[in-house]
Length: 195
Image (cartoon, rainbow, N blue to C red):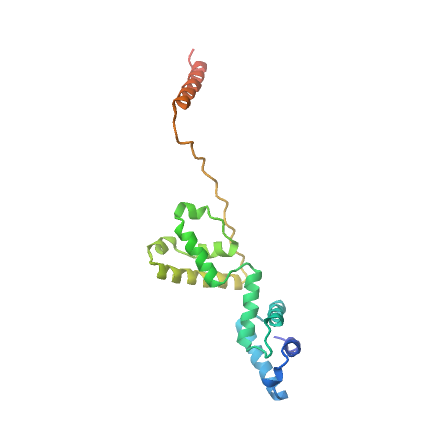
């Protein structure tokens, strides 16, 4: 990671958080903080300038007077990037998956899902999931969420949900008029065949 990016980041942090001097009193403390922030940013995988911009945007609206820890800032960057990619929070995603699970196999396939939720859906072993108690199923869904986020963070696209073909459903009720109309239609067909 380029030192100039960290320097610019700290200029922005100092402008956003008016009480930054309470944390970084001397030049040596600022240099040490920059090293720590650089290590955290690289280790958390948010070194891309566009992700840092998302974290800065969040910092501007958070309303704090002191700068966050590097881990908190990285979390802001990741959360904002996930929201931009259409990834809900873990709690919301688990709730959506549990709702889909309650619909049953046939209806589950016909449920329209966001790309992130559909990718999560694909990481679940649905037979095993259906055999679990609610707590264990939620743990499975949490693991699937983590796998979906890892999938996204590795730069892979989300799978597209296939469009399901609706089955034609017969009217169901056979009445005397339906039966008579069917017999008349069959008679007409048979006339053309028998000579």
